[in-house]
Picture 1 (cartoon, rainbow, N blue to C red):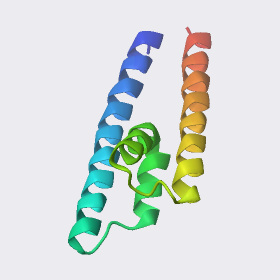
Picture 2: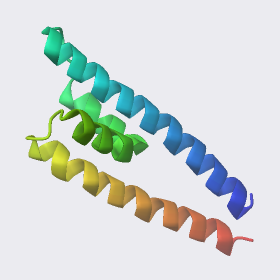
Picture 3: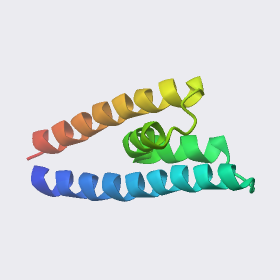
Length: 98
């Protein structure tokens, strides 16, 4: 697999999970406003951990959802940092194997 193929796969995965994580944050905000059963914080954090942290974080700031929760305002940026490190390591490893 080439570096460009690896980057393409990573980007497609990250875009997909970021859209899902953003949608979940928006859905949770709407449920909160309507007083319905909410999406658990664990689920929201896991969506971030699986790659949706950047989209979820930006969405939460934009819609002002869970911005007072340190778990999200510190945890999601840390997950973004983790993702950046992992992507660099993956691309580096693929580049070395060529």
